[in-house]
Structure formats: C-alpha cells, structure tokens
Image (cartoon, rainbow, N blue to C red):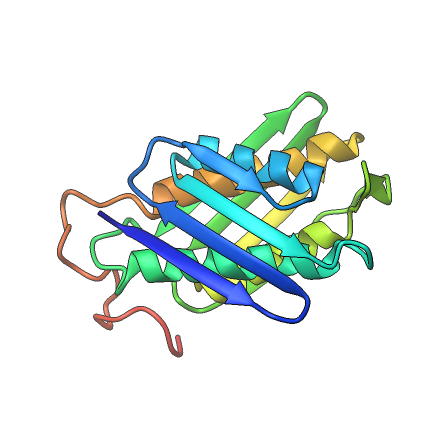
Length: 199
C-alpha cells in the first residue's frame, strides 16, 4: 500500500496528514478553514486519494500559516507515499469546466518542484478566506510534493468556480500521474533511472 502519515508542529500550526494513493477518495478533513476543507474534500474525491487532515493554527491572526502548512504536509505525505516514484505514469493533465469557468492543470511528478500559476480571482475573498492564499497552497504542495505544476484559468467570472476548478484539476492530474503503469510497473519513468535533480 502506498500510504504515508506526516506530522508538522511549529509555533504557528500543528498539522497531521494521512494519505493512501490507492484509495477510493475517502476523506476526513478539519483545518478550521471552511472553504479550504471543501476544496480538500474535492481534491480527495476526484483524485481517489484517501485523505485525512487535522490542522490547528493561529487563525486569530489570519489563514496564511494554516493554509500553507497544510499544503506543505500534504506535499510531504505525497512524496513519502511515492517513494522512488517507481512504476508511476508520472504525467497528468486535466481541463476542468465548471459552468462559465475553464481551468487547465498539468503536472509532472518529476521530483523537481516548480509552480506556474496563471489564475486571477474577481473577488478578494471566498467566505473568510483570501483568494491570494490559493497560490500559496499550490506552491506548498508543488514544493514539498516534488511536482512540476502548471495551473491556468483560461476564463471564468465566479471566484468559487475558479478555485474549485483548480483543485479538481489538480485532483484529476494527480490521479493520472500517480497511477501505476502496467507496462513498466518496476521502472522509474526517466531515462536517467532516477527522478529529481537537474534536467
């Protein structure tokens, strides 16, 4: 089973994440940030990655630290569960329509972290959550998860739809990329024989 549990405790937050890459999309999420919980539930459901998240943070200041640290720990759990990334398909991509919105997400489980974020939100907040924090979450997941991750909102007017399509796109792309390739289930998908490092 490709599973992992990672915990992180700082003076700002305390976060625990358990994932199962070969799950069925079962989630149990509590971060103290309602909209982030909703997005993480979408991430789990549409990736079929079982996800348990418990987070306590300094929400009396703002949501930044909790949001970012949840992203870091999810990324670290992903890295731990993937191991040497042997046998995975490695690449994934999705175009997600959501009413008037279209978002494209492409990723490479390259073990070379990089984020391209081309997303703008008409609103500054969704519920109590600043929309600028979504980039910070995706950056944290990409960095800690060893993902080359490109997220582009092609068009859209509704900030909720834009955010949700980004998370659903990440979910679908991850679902593809971490799947085991039946044609090379014991091979690292790289001509170098290892993922990470320089090009």
